[in-house]
Length: 261
Image (cartoon, rainbow, N blue to C red; front, side):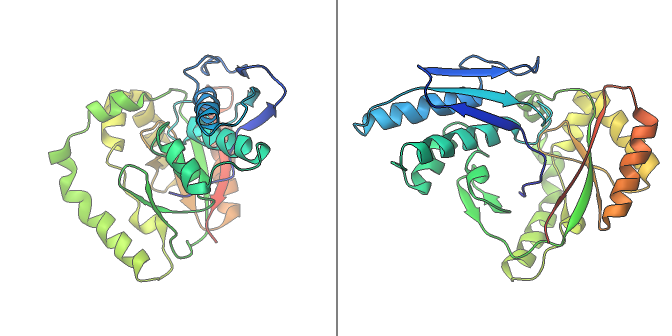
């Protein structure tokens, strides 16, 4: 897993009473089901158990990461809230304690406290720093549909995809030998097939992107976001311009980002 530079903006008011979340995005809940809200509640509960005085926090979320896009938007916000509250309260919890707290909210919350690319195993609790990643620029697309993670996993066929596991193992062997890792050569996502079958919009967008960009397009997480990798930024920028010219005015959104290097 690797962070990219697309992110939400969070504004925290530590003088509030109780926990409150505000977000104008129609697909983002403002109640206790919001991961940022749950993160604050969990932190204050653990803080109280340590005998500290608990307060409240008001969290305003300016949403930039597409909800239901498989980019960990909710998880990264939860990690940010936990980290910010811990800093504000003079770090009553160690980083391992905070990451364990985050794991109770979601499997990828600890990753967003790791501060960099990671080999992630287990259920998200085993994180290891890899050698340097080769730098890539990416054209990222939101196909205009939110994928439901649970629904995608239910369509997953373990027998059908078991033959692909050697790819992951070979890639990890490269990493563990300390060689520079070319992510573009090893990427594979077992959930791409189920997501494309469940959401035709993902499949159609993927096929159209590959046709327009003349390169392989992959899905991130459980979907629905899609991306194409380019080693040169100018090529990625050109790809963005091609998609914007084709999709301008539609509900598909295009982002330019990068990782590695």
